[in-house]
Length: 284
Image 1 (cartoon, rainbow, N blue to C red):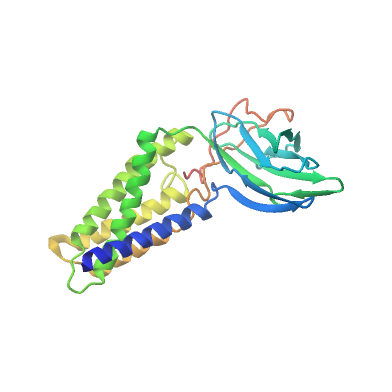
Image 2: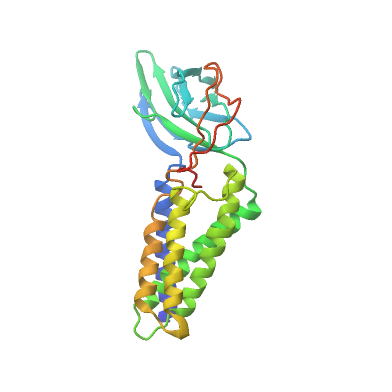
């Protein structure tokens, strides 16, 4: 009964950490609501999109007096802002942003107006959206599941390390194995499909996601080595478990892949010759 309770606690901690990471990551859509012309308007502004299509921006605004437009330009460039009117289709205002190459980013604002009033849905700061190539589900789904299981086993091992009668050795081995498969086999494959590169962490670069995975792996390798011969190595396991939880809480895709745009005509938002990925920014 106690073991079941320990697994339940480990699952709740892992699920909470995964939810926090997801909700705070830079690829999660910005959602909210505002009031214009005595009408409540709910919105969701995407920050992640595939390179296979333009991004459709759709805002539900039933009040026909409300109109609007989008301002956008390539991220970290001196491009002028491009203005695109939102077209009304029944109760919706619809516009689009042009698709970009993998790791290309746009910054945009959605402005709604009615008579003499207008509001920017994102406030003063623009929304930054990143484009990525499609990743096959056969790689992406196992990657997500195995990384979650690695975190689950890690948390469970940390709880076991606190139990004087327990031995976290087997859990430590499972954690190290799952983390290696999810973070160093499937993870780089996901990045390769999405952004064209397998690894830009140490020693090739300073990518945050790659390096935090590497740091966690080193922690668990140390815990496994310390537990040779069946020793519980409780403090090593507990330390590795806390380390993985700490890096897991860092928002996913923070300092992510970012295309360095080459000089192009200001009349176009598409690259003629894609620039290189920034060596310090590639994380999924």
